[in-house]
Length: 561
Image 1 (cartoon, one colour):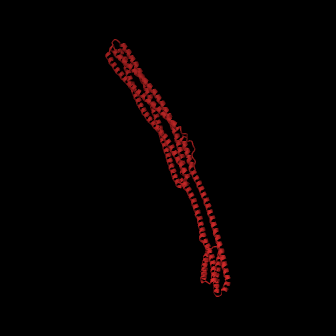
Image 2 (tube, helix red, strand yellow):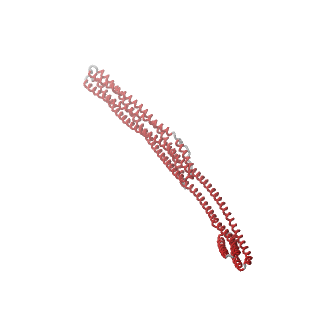
Image 3 (cartoon, one colour):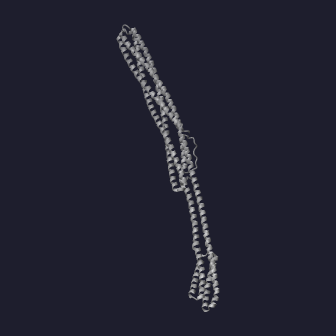
């Protein structure tokens, strides 16, 4: 069952609230006990004590009224005695309903009996005094003794009630002290429990966060060899830990794949550089051969011109013309051989250019794959940034909840502050990784653009080489025609004496062919120079690509997987 951080925090506050409620309940319970005790002390016992004192005073008043009547026979004193007796009877009845102990009840009942007996005997004594004063005075001794007994009993009741009031006051003081101790003990226990709950929850939350922060520092330093973070949390922190472990695994695999791609890129760039060097050498050889062919063509043209001049002197130098024709035939054979060798070189160049073209395409695919991996890393970095933002928001919520809790939420505020700092560090590390990935993507794009330019240059080189091959075919055809014509000139040299005009026309035709051959060779030479320039550009691009591959490899070497 997933137990989120908010539920943990709410549980901690709920436990504290339960203890606070328990303290409030205990306080209310004891206050109720104190209130009842004081109510009993003030409302009942104080009333009983006051009634007891009034009863004692009434008993004294009755005896005083009886003595006054015995001395003066004043009817008012007798009426006063009866009034006080009735009042005392009412007080005794009221007090009897309030007392709870049997001894008090028995004493009050006895006091009521004495009061009734005193009233009856006092009435008899008063009547006797009216008829015989001396006899009445003598009989009053028993009545006065009843009054004294009643007074003594009232004193006993009053003293006992005074003692009960004092004991109740002491008991209330002891109860208040006990309540204070109980509330203090429970409050301290609740405070300690709140601290323990806060420490427990803060450790549950902060321990995996600290582990993630340390792992993030290791990743920022380029170390991806750390073990997966273990956590038993089934909350947002547990989800964050699992996502972080998955991110490290994906990043480790991505770095490994990127390293392999960088190695392939470096190898392909080295092969491209070597191929470009070989092609450059071949192109230089082609240029040399073409220069030799051009030299032979120039020699051929010069020989034809000399043959034309010799035709004008054919009548006097037929043998000289035959010798020149033989020289022209030899030059044409040399030109044919050079043309054949040039065709073979062109064919090798075309094959090499095709191989270079395929190699560059493969390298371009590798670079595009590397660019895709860089984009994947960028997505992972965005995910890290999102996690850091969520962690920061979570820390902010925890800070708000801690602020609401007041002093008891101070520990949670510290934990929330640590979480927010860790989230900011994770966000900073994510930005560093994003900047690194942006640099890699930019260099990869530059490499891709260079490869596109290289592919275009190779395509142009293939086209130029193809044109050079076509030109060499034309040269070969022209040389073959020249060779055939020279052979005809050699065969007709013996007839030059008789056919000078025909020989002259034939030599003019040879001169035209030689001129065309020279023009074609000049075009081939120009194309070869262009091809050489293209190959130099390819070599430069291959070198730049190799350097980019080395920089990419050095950047990736920062990470240990």
